[in-house]
Each structure stands twice: as structure tokens, then as C-alpha cells.
Image (tube, rainbow, N blue to C red; front, side, top):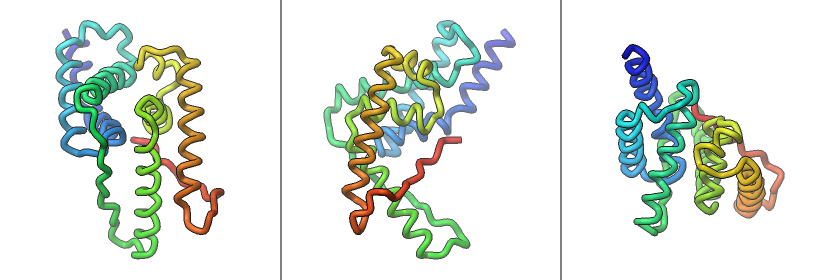
Length: 179
């Protein structure tokens, strides 16, 4: 009973992280919130199906990914990209604008990836899951994870290369890992 209570608490503390992951896939705050809530509800209802308690992140990511795939199958619509507020007090306006433009470029490039590549890229590079955890979460072989990730990174580099000013394709655009 105590283990179940701890698991419920751990799952609830992962809500912000799940929301950010869902948002990175769909770029829609309302949809990300709905997906996150549905994933949490499903996880809390099926706590008994969790075999390895130390892998809650991968398990929740799998639930969220499946819900997102279900949504894509049913919606079949183009995703919109909403700009967010990056303004931080004390930052120079030029710095804020440059960071904002870079973030928008990266988001647009990630949104151009096919859904399978986008899922793998965000799970590995933003969530920090291992290839094995992503493979388990998406029910695909680890080799498929690696090939999709490789293709996603090549495509991302190509997409970002066409959007940088002055044709400078060597500019490094940092991707922040979710806390």
C-alpha cells in the first residue's frame, strides 16, 4: 500500500515534465494539457501494470506517446506553432529577441519532422531517456530508435540550415533538456 502511495506521488510530480514533452510534440497548450491529464489518469488507473518502478519516466512517456499517436490518427490536422513568452527581466531586448528567434526556428524545424522522428528526438534529446527506454516506450527496436534519431538530427540540421540568416549553416542552436 505504501509503495502504491509513493508511486502516485512520483507520477504526480512528473506532470510538468510530461506537459512540456506533450507541448514539444503538438505546440498547443490546451492539447498538451489534455494529453498530460489523460496520461496521468491512465497511469494512475493502471499502476499495477508498472513492472519496474524505477522506470516511471519511460512508462509515462510511453503512455503519453500512445495518446498522442491516437490523437494524430483521429485528428489528421496540421499543427500550429504558438510563440511563447521568453522575456526575462534584466535581459537586454536584443538578447531576448535573438533567443526568441532561435527558439522559434528550432520549434519550426522540429515541427517539420515527421511524427515518428519528432517523438524519438524529443524523448532522447529533451527528456533524456536512453535508447532502450525510448524503444520500450514506443514499442520499437533500439536500432529503429537510433535510425529515426539519426534521420531526425540530419533533417533538423538541414531545416535549420535553410532558416539561418546569411546562409551560415554552422551556427549551433542549443536544445534545452527538460528539467
